[in-house]
View 1 (cartoon, rainbow, N blue to C red):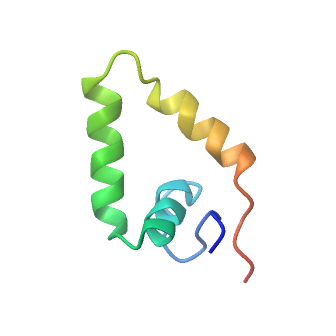
View 2: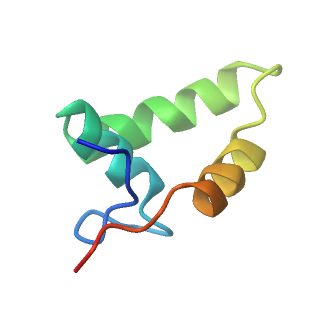
Length: 62
């Protein structure tokens, strides 16, 4: 299964929802983990990574 932005589980752009579908996890868990890693790790620029994934990841077909 390819990594695609989710159309069903989207809050902003569907990046975390797409990662959750790809991993087979709950989207809420992926979002919480992403925020925690972004806040707790100074070396991980979460907002920049999200924007890059938003541009790179294709959107799932309807």
